[in-house]
Image 1 (tube, one colour):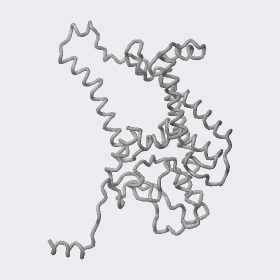
Image 2: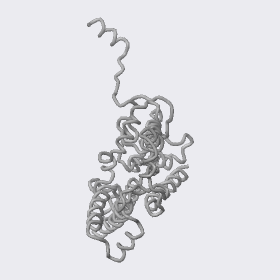
Image 3: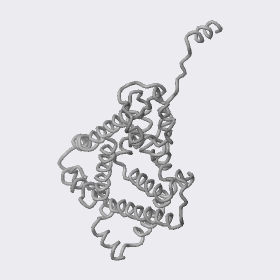
Length: 312
């Protein structure tokens, strides 16, 4: 089950990353700076409001066309997005986000080469890293960063001519500056602070977490505390597996930035594969859990409440 779950995530992330790179090329969505038009599914997003049409209509018809073709669809998208965040949390981050895909890829590479996934952690295996390991990590990160920068630039300039200019060395000055600056910034992010950006720097991620925390019945990776003694022989494999470096066996408040990637669940399944009772971590969707709200509420015993009331 663990392998199946992570394979499903890999397929979803790979498909979405391909969509992220190919959407401008296929004219699915992009903003063309040369014409200052949005292109959506190979059509210019103009709402068919042309100068000729405006001469034959009134302000009411114009307003209704903007309302039905732009404002209402945007409201529907926002409402659907809020519901998804409220119900499932950062599931976009864990299953689709191109940046989080890079986080996991670089984490895996760094763990294999150095025995750790961040520069400030000590090696879990006692493995000594060499200079060429770090060179490889930086080169891989820089390559992905350049691909990212190129992909983002293709959302702003006609993609095919821009790609031709890049590979023939004829790209103009401003796009070249953008590529260099973006590649440098992304490289630093991927090498030094990739999951910290997900935690504190991504506005979309924080917004997802806020809506998730508002719902006491949202999907949550929950720990079976009644069987906690089985963890005594485990070397925190679940927390080591978490790309966000979260205390996965703690309460919801401590997992504010959980991406629902289920890496911790998969790690626990692997550790407990010979245990008839199964893993100790699993998704809890729909059942209200303790300490699941954003603001903790302390419950006092009835006797304490009675004494306090009499005192008042």
